[in-house]
Length: 142
Image (cartoon, rainbow, N blue to C red; front, side, top):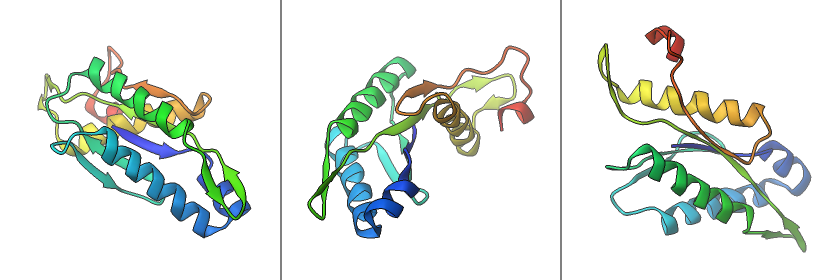
């Protein structure tokens, strides 16, 4: 699972970096509350997080991401007497064995990232699962 806080630069620009820090901390807290201890959570960029869901099939990962997305959307953050409402976009990819062998972590993250950015480009605040094109080569997937 990859997730990216929507319009994060705008939050920093309008409300300041302290508010941006609270947004990141809030999202990290939601991940810690909702996810299991066995799941691996990491902040991998300014406002981007990656999560490895241990032994979780695609349909459950999509459902879990939707639950996290909803929790983020419904958690207002106070900043200097104002309320900051946030949303996030999610990309989900499943570890599989394909014709070229087992999927590597880099391939898995690239696929989740591709799904994430499809979601961001198509309205944001959504969960998108990666689906390989029927004629895809490995280069197409990365």
